Every structure is written in structure tokens, then in C-alpha cells.
Image (cartoon, rainbow over all chains, first blue to last red; front, side):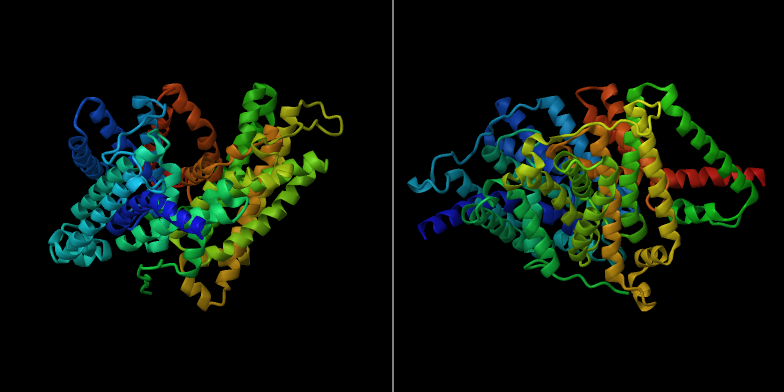
Length: 292
Length: 342
């Protein structure tokens, strides 16, 4: 029983990584109705920017917020330059563009900062929390930031005009345009926000997994799994989904032999496929109904 | 020619339809082109270096795999970012059969096809409930997980674990005066021709029409009595068969299989090849194969450190200038030539 509790707690602390990434995934999904396969790499690039700033001697929190601002602008620019011209292109062209973006960013990051593994500082310190070895101060801080972010998003989408406009233009672009919302800029805003959240996720994840150009690929799959489990249209669900994925992964690794260390990504696959088949809307998402 | 040009450019499938209309001049052009390509294909291995022969062989193999993906995506409307998994299953089936059971390489192809059909059909069943981006996601996860499953220790006796399996290159049979590369080239050429011919016929059959009806309007096709679930799962199986046979051929030609050759990168390459060649246009698969094999090399020759970035830029450029792939581009050019002639 003790082992079980320990593993659940350890699962929650890894889950906080996935929760953070899942939140970024949901953000872009709500804004543009696509999953961004380059999301992980964009977050990685933002983290490198933060690393560079810190290396230049900028204090951590200044670098933190500066990176968020840079990422926001970067996300908006990417949308304006690359994806706006493809507004009406088929979904496959979008997927291919995400792939192109992914290879460009990975390659550029490797070129600028090379492929060696770098340590990234944590603002919360890496000491164990309250003397317990199960969860470190950094992971507790990460959970706190994720929950804060979630709260901020909740208020943004529920109580601000811009948040409402963003939701409206994702739901029904034509009607949104008719009531005077500038839909195309809303999409750009969604990209900016998603990139900024991705940057936060990247900076929080980096102290745990170390910084290198390929750090996000595996994590992104878990982030997808968390987002799908919670429901792609629900930020709260995605965070909970992320934590759940962490717990499931840890428990399966401990109590099911063989699967343990070797098949970790397969667990994410099974979660994704099972959830999509049994409850495509996720735990908290809305089922989409199509009009014929 | 009364076909709407914009329509043809936007829907490669329509472009393919135009092509089959009996139109004197058009037909002749086609036959001349076909003969030229045939002659070139037969002469090529005798006039070029053996490495180039190997490369062209790989282009044909990728073309078969992309054709499989095209049957699924272009003609049935289902996405897949997971075809590396089926390519891997085909490759491993062939390698294990040759390594453990000493089966002749020729017979590994049908076996790989059957095994992949079963796997594809089974994966197609849960995929029935998924659409668009959700299906892309599920298949993406499949191809991320594939190398890990292949490395699994209980399977190591069969798969050779991380080390993979090394197999022997076959000699030319019947004492033909060909070296191994040349023979494999012709062997692949025959298989490729066969596979494309079968795909062509499949799409012209009742089954093919049902597949396309599902793509165009699932509800309408169901009302006309098409069993959507059965056809979609079967299409997934057929698509996996094509890709699996390509995988088996790939294993024989490369003489080596290992888990890390079948990562998500391969799935992505196949999808990219499909989009570049043209979704829903059979010959597009060859252009896709060319892209998959040669563009990474071109990118590398521009800059070693930034090869990924140049690959991405070339890709973006192609999507911008040819949003419907080579298919739409060729449809446009044909239309211009024909109009000038008329």
C-alpha cells in the first residue's frame, strides 16, 4: 500500500509536466481547431531563448517573462507569415506545414545552440519538499504554476471580451465575423497565447528533463494523451488528464512487469486510442455534433 | 475540353478522371510518355552507377508505400501518421522469415502483405470512430510507440532487439547476367508495376467506387447501401498491405532491419511524400518517392548543419506553390498544352 501511495505521488509530480504541455495543446486546439505537431519544438525553442538570456546574466524572473513575451510575438508572426496564406488549404497541407515548421525549428536550435545537453535552472530550487524524497520543490512549484495558469485561462475565456471573441471565432467564424469580431486576428492571438503557454511549459520542464533540441518529442505525445483524456476542448480537463496520465504511467510501470521501463510510450498510445474509441470527447470535453 | 480548370486543380481526383477520357491527342501523349518511361526504366540499370540503381530502387519502394497511404487518405479520406508501423511489420516479417525460417525472399512478400492486412484491418476497427485530426493523433502515437515495441525484450529472440537483423542479398535467378543490385532493381520494378496495376483496377471496381463515395460523403454512401465500417476497415487493411509489402522489399534491398529505422520520421516522410505527389492521384506516389529519397540529400548538400531547416523550407515552398501537389500542377500544365493545341 505504501508503495502504491508513493507511486501515485511520484506519478502526480511527473504528471505536472504533461499537464503543462497538455494545456498548451488545448489552447491551440481551442483557437484554431488543429493539433499543432510543432508545439513541442516551439516550446523547446522558447526555452533555449530563456537559457540564452540567463546565460547572458539576465535575472531568472526577468528572463522568464521576457521569454513569454518573445514567444507570444513569435507565435503571432508564425501565424501571420506561414498559416494565414493557407487559410482555406486542406487539413493535410496544414499538417505538412506543422512538420516543416518542426524540422526547421529543431535544426535551427541545433545549429545555434548545438545538440549537447544543457542544465536549466529552477526558480524553486531542487531540494526535496518538506524533507520528503517523493516530490521536489521544483515539481511542487511546477504544479502551482500550472494551476495558476489554468485559473488565469479560465478567467480569460469566461470573463473577458477578448476571450469570448476568441471562443466565438473558433466555434463559428462566419457568425463571429458578422458581429464584428476580427476572426483572423483572433486566430493569430490564439497562436500567440499557445506559444506563450508552451514557453512556460518548456521552461518548467527543462530543469527536469534537461535542455536539448529533441527534449519535447516524447513529452508532447504524453501531452497529447493528457489533452485527449481530459477532452481537447477543456483546459481544466487537460490539466487533470495530464496528471492522470502521469499516475497511470507510473502505476503501470510499477505493477505490470515488462511494460515498466520498456513500453512507456506505448502506454500513452493505449490511453489515446482507448479514450478516443470509448469516449471521443474525453472526460470533460463536449462531443462535437456535425450538421448534415 | 469542358472540364472546369479550377476544379481540376483543387481536386486531383478530378484531374485523374480527366486523364482517362478518350481524347485523341491526350491519349497519344500518354502512350508516348508511357513508352518513354518504360524504355528509360529498362535501360537505366545498365547505364548508371550501382548506387544510383539502388537509389531508384528505393524510390520505387517508397512509391509503393506512399501508394498504400494514398489509397487510405486520398481515396478513402482517412488520415494516417502511423504508416511506419506497417512498413516495420512488413520489413520484420520478411527479415524474420528469411533469417529464422530460411524462406526465399520472393515468398516473404505475400506473407508480409497478409500479416499487414490483418494488423491494418484490426487497427482500422478502432479508427472507424475517429476522424480527421483525432485519427492523425492516434496513428501518430502508434508510430511513436513502434520502435519501443520492436525493442521489447520478450520479442528479442525474433526481432534481434536493438541490433536488428542482417539478411543476405539475393542473387539473380536462372543465371541471368545481372549483378545483385540490377536484379533487385528489376525485381522491385516488376512488383511495383504489379502493385500499381492492381491499385488502378481496384479503384475502378465497385469496391473502389464505394471507397471514394465514403470519402466524398459518408452519409450519402451509407444511404446507398455501402457498408461504411467494413469498407473503411478493409481499406485500412489494403493500405497496410501495400505499405507492408514496401517494407518487406525495403528490408531485402537494404539487407538490414532495426527498430530505429521505423520511427515517426518515416511516417512523416511518407505523409509528406503523399502531399507533395498529390493526394488522390496514383502516379503522384512516384513524385512522393523521389521527394522522400532525394530532398533530404539536397538539403544536406546546401548546408550540413542546417539540413533540417532547408528540408523544411523546401517543403514549405512546395506547399505554397503547389497546394495540391504535383498532381494539380500537372493537371494545370496539361490543360494549358491541350488548349493551345485545340
